[in-house]
Image (cartoon, rainbow, N blue to C red; front, side):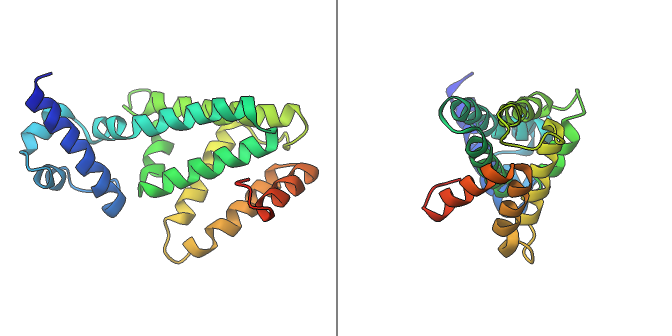
Length: 197
């Protein structure tokens, strides 16, 4: 890729990230191109669809969350690992307004540019959940698909101005319902002592 084309691509991604944070995933592609000081045709050469732009923008975050799940699986108690990962996953999905709708659609659409990243992210959460379940730290009547749906639901709550102030409490309520009583108490003690869990 030529230096000017690479610069345009990087500028488009930076501007798109800001625009989506401010206006949501339905922000106009024409507006993104204008803010990046390039023509719409230039944007479409790099990213032929909105999903292709979002995939390029979000792939690094998906990869980071997947890597975080792997690290937590090796280093943390099963219940704590699950809650820590869920908290970070919900915070990330809340940052990009409206992305949960696209993720929910992409998970079942093999033609979507976001499909592979969403599948990897769901699998990472499912591994943490399965580990917690195998150790008796989490209830067994939820699977990876259910966990993925809860992330979407919690992110949606955080994206609603009237509900956002309650999002933290609702997150704690839901995670305590996923964990067994003993593990839930341990996570709560961690929060009170300043831990992330």
